Image (cartoon, rainbow, N blue to C red; front, side):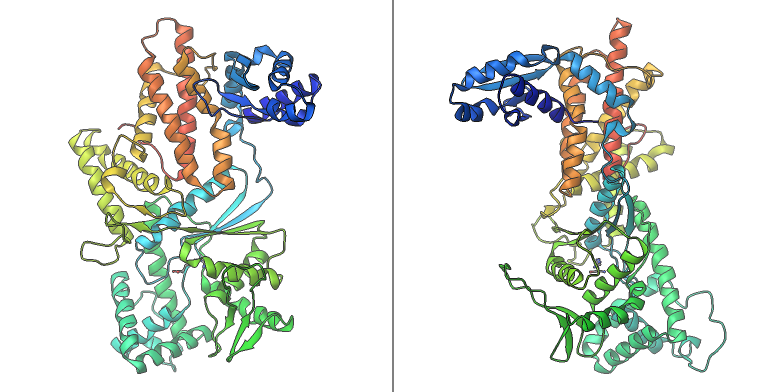
Length: 583
Ligand code: ARG
């Protein structure tokens, strides 16, 4: 559906033309004086200069040409503003069209286009920690938003599954259990189906090996060799790698599921490996890679750079591929397999330079053609109340599972204390509220900014929080269920000023979502639904909905809150959470 602003701008432009002025002056904006009007046009002020006459004269002439049916207020005011309020009829017709259209009439601008969203990015064999939270939450939300706009979306987790960490685990395992068949090079039989370690052992082996590497040179050497041999395809090491992958991926899936975060593609750095040799050869053949102190690098600096952009390292002096190499090779794979129109990376903003280098190298090398968009959304840090990166009480890195668990217990206490639901529904209700608290607490901030994790505030049922939004939805659901079947009821003209405010808020759904999409900013969806929920609650407080005696009027109230509820529910599904039945 066309946005209201566009509809009334077109009408305004026509009115300017009909009054004998250039149509281009007819731009309408949302009013910055909501106490006076809903929309305004300041075009007469600019037109006055060109036509050398008083702006108010132009404004008056234009107002004459507007269709009075569309507005409850249309007036020219000094020195030459045109103030507008939409008519009841206009709003009613617009909302009824939204109600009956698919997805509220949103324009599916992504139809026929594919986007890869690279988010999550965990490393196998390492527990997910809070450093992984924002990528998961923001990436999932943006992916859902793109999908809503008609894009074919592929969320790719891009596992860290190939580097030295793998060699470290293999080397450490060999020291601990040298007799395992995986280390016997003469072994030709099948390897056991079960891993020789559990996930918790694995999570202990990795940090132990990582610490040992720093103090034990011989061990570090072994780990490097093991990494190399794994990448060369040594059978036993491959089998260990498979075990690590299987356990890790199962554990990650469980935790991402609890966050309602899902990936369409579970590829990792290892999957990019086969593309590396040809890609390097190509960069060299095109003369784009140059040798520098034994390494091969791609100079990517540009004249307009304000800060120095160092060359992108393609091959290290010891011949190994590194982070940038993998990201470039992954692009080769994605272009071949997914043919995306856009790739969006959602990582910590400290990786900004890395992506700048990689993007430039990819363009230079022709891996990513001009018409394919690349975007890195670098997000800020989640801080503790001390303003420093969030830590556990003893100063360690907090596991993601622990953070989710803490929030869940905090919410559960409220759910139980306030006897919100029957015992059998406590778990499910708690999980939904906790997820809303966690995700909205994060997403309501501009992604690039740091924010403070505040469990008390995030989980509050009042204020700009996830639970408040859920509460609003649940309240409406309860009214609707007491009313009975309502889905077929048409939207009516606003019954009172609160109804009109609510209707106006509903019409802003499309524009809010478009802005969120175009600026990769789920926080704009949060800001929108906070405003909408406020209008819903105000309407509810000022209007006796179920007590209304006139059945027709009552049906109008119900249709309106039903539509508002649907808009809220759709919006939170784009943020990645959902409402419980009761709250
Ligand atoms: N595994 C990486 C890390 O832990 C993050 C990967 C982000 N995605 C990417 N395509 N580089 O830092």
